[in-house]
Image (cartoon, rainbow, N blue to C red; front, side, top):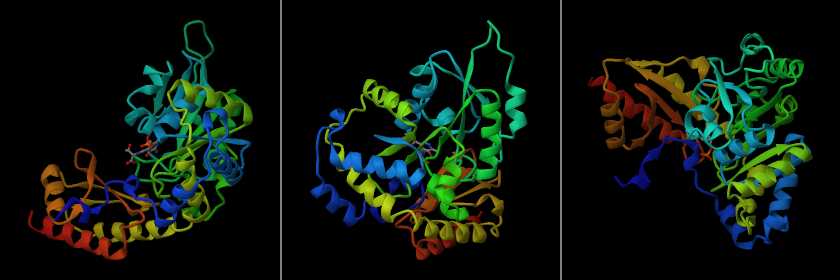
Length: 347
Ligand code: TLP
């Protein structure tokens, strides 16, 4: 079986652009975006800001660039950032928060994805000549390493209250915020109104080939524009990236519902298989994570799954993540379940 035929459940980042997106790229009106003169980029940014209820938006190359740019726009070097101990910024962004932004990450574990306000209170130290000044709280919604868990608007409000009380800013890595909004059937603005600024990704479940968007107030986005430039992110005729982004925001959000249905089906069936430890209440959006029984060799399991036509990956030892996305249909879910059943029944 060639890799193209595999059922690829490694991530929603593997989605390919739709035909309509490819057409839009071909016909996009272009200009130089470093001069803010690309009409397609400007249109996408206006649409994005309006959609999430903030003043302004900025197109960047990736989620990682969006997070780094936002950290640097929110903070000065040497300041302290509270973030979740399993967050993407802390785990997977090559330490850019320290190496490039010069910030001190202060990880706090919150297995429900959302901090309890008291956890922030407990972590705060009095202002002192010896301590770095705390500046920012970061949340991740949905939370990747907790299997796509949602932080609800109420939880965000509670975190926002504690942020305001201590003059901290609140930033959301909302790479998959539209998954949260669709899953709870709540307008995305109900989430975003509680944070000062955020980013979301076009290139995950929304199917774009490239791109993420930072949103916030005008001053913040002006700073972010300059920081994006110093990070090498001034992209000139970026309308070729923005054109599919417009389609993503107009047409690709509602269908995330299908990915959630498929994830639920996967979760329900996998939870019944011996050797799999899966808590269904954690399957909230387009991800299914489960622990393999410690007696099972994880690498061997992944290899045999690939031989059976299913590609996936481990988040840590014996912890498997499956991600549903456009291109994964119900029949692929069935094939995956059958393959896993077959492999584990031989163990
Ligand atoms: N996540 C990727 C991998 O890096 C793990 C994935 O396959 O899920 N924030 C969150 C919450 C993310 O999940 C990701 C990507 C990013 C930021 C970074 O986005 P990119 O990959 O565009 O830099």
